[in-house]
Image 1 (cartoon, rainbow over the protein chains, first blue to last red):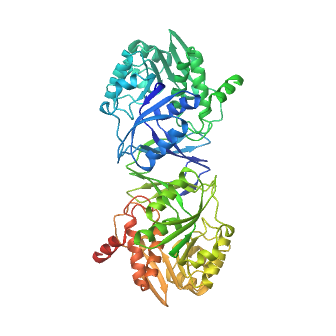
Image 2: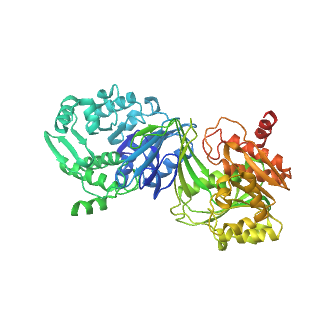
Image 3: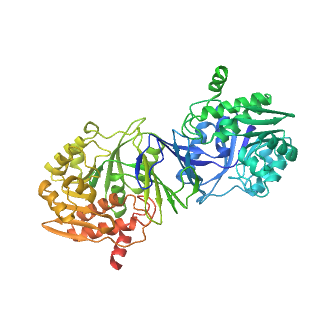
Length: 302
Length: 302
């Protein structure tokens, strides 16, 4: 069995409330929108790829509780194949996201109590590497050391490595050195490089880590890419934004879809921006992820 | 099939976060406690009765979504029998409850979007009335007119009627006229009677509606009961309170348990206060509901 993308990392449960304004503390407020959805960096990227038509597999650690069962059902419904380490007592990351529709401001309350990251001993890295065209990794659901070791083996076999890195943590540079497709939010780039300018940030990251493509995402200011020696800016598409939850995860998934298709980098960045923008029209990280036809239609008229 | 208590009303899904302090708006906050639990006035009262050992049946309206399935599984696990009207597209009431552990303050964001109340046409009132010793009703999950009609038929057959009334709504007096066991929070009594003094409130409600027992609950100030011509105060038990969510629902359930046992009113009020207090030691409306042995042990040493 081979997959276009195998993802190792976090899948979370998000409980989302759409509000007209932030509620008063201590009061009872009626919310016009409510949703329970799967989330998480790698989890949502894989759902994006599956909706677009790619063949994907999620490798992660879950329990036997209501939340874990919910995530499994949702992955199955989306056509995401699963290779799970399941253990009684393990819980997924859980979050409550309060979204103010008028301003897009979000308040997140979350917990990793009871969660557990995948370790190298819990996966079969060579089997994984041998059955994927791209490996997509985060170090929220996977130990950083495991991510580094898996990325090493992938590079040896010519399998492309992509990461979703939200936070700069000690030792992350080793993983970046092994990353072919480096898509990071501008805050990450700033923290790591100390450089607010996206072009200089991208050039620095490329020089230091040698990634084939570096893409710095900057929310409504679009994204900035450096690939094959060319730097360019892709503006964000204008849509009626309801909620930006999961926008970056979805961008990652759509970016990898373009890489799988062998498109040029400008087309990949434009496509990923469109998919991420379309997602933002709905509450939650996954509900609004479009299928391929919808993206093509959107791009044809954009 | 006969039941000790048949309950018609609301079952909700509560997503609870226990916090050290209220989070800043727009920020990301780690919560030390998280829980997904069933809730709702009648739903939680029935779970209380089931844990104590009573034979109960929940009559309500649910859909086929994740939330409805969760509620069904939870009721089944608790041994609550079910008589459900299930319709594609109907959603349960859903709530996010942010609890600050240090102060007990709660912020609730909830929605009734997609929900639907049970109507008289959707239940078989005579069959219900014929198979219960007590009927417990709320008008959050059941139309008020339906509650009134069912209560009428119950009274004719000598079946006791209990209600959980949170809000004063037009026409509620008709339902109160048909209520044998009237347990209401002090705010309800104040809104209806315009009288802050619990004794005068209870006497007024008894005089006007003729209930066999009137009990006004006042949180940490305990409860005030009027039954068989006697008025008395039951102080609240002192416990380490984590969360008061569902405290009133649990009090109702335990109160009915005492009525089923034929205990005197002082014993019933003391028992219900103990069960409600024990519940408050855990996050969420249902997790902390004790079993009978635990209550007896608590009362023996209290």
